[in-house]
Image 1 (cartoon, rainbow, N blue to C red):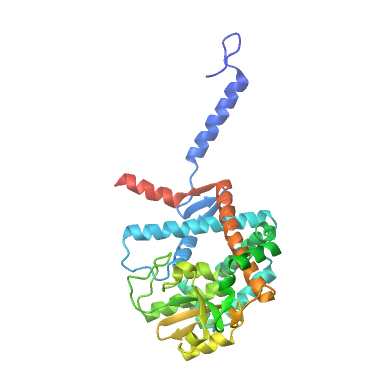
Image 2: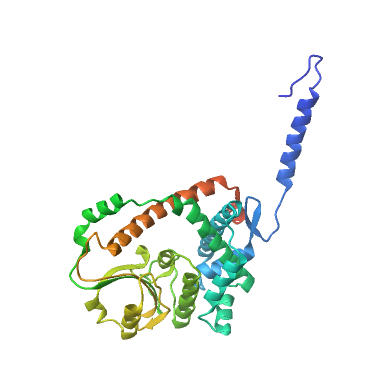
Length: 349
């Protein structure tokens, strides 16, 4: 209702305010984005070209005969990942935590080192990326990791009492009958298998697809992406759901393994990730989590304390990271134009 003065005329300041609101509303309604914009995060655009690159990275072996709904679902999932990444990058920028050029160049050279120029260019082509695109992604990943270190890692404290309590509650698990190694793996096999389940529902159908997929994963591991997350998303074995964690493997079991695989594992140090290993089952990347000698491991052993401390830290970090993402999403202004177009197409059918 418009406020009126005593003589019955409209109050000028109020009318002016209403007009401004109406103009602003009309302007907002008329504002449109270009056809190349898939979404915006706090006004910053995410383009369909970026989405195409994300699809090539996240779904390298998408079924060639995927129906329209499957393709749409893949694009929605990939775009949501891009939106989350952009939200975190902007928070890193605001906190003054952007990675430096020297850090980006160092990581880029590290990624490129294992490949010939031709091999590296082929990997970029498969992901529909240029060198500039890859460096931008490296900068984002390094910056977001700095953000997590500051906002999450620096706030986690694992006390000696926490470590002692865990050890006492799980003492039997530290009594080892023989030497063993704690391993995680990412496995890609060359043949079709309807029983393979990973978060991306991605399965290599032949040897060429398997090679391309494992090379993509290897590059992302060396780029600093979380091994467990990549295993959940792409590994083609029963351990994918556990982040590739195989658990503790006795040395006697390794005696029966592929000789090259066994040799690489025994030469690795704790925390190290192997290069791509070709075995009869397919292509593997192995992460050696720890090596454990036989016998009862005591709490006084620094390695036991560190293993427990790391496990407790990672559990708390994962919990806090999930909460951090939810808060960040709720505070960001996101417009998903691609999702809107999906709903609009429903109405036209």
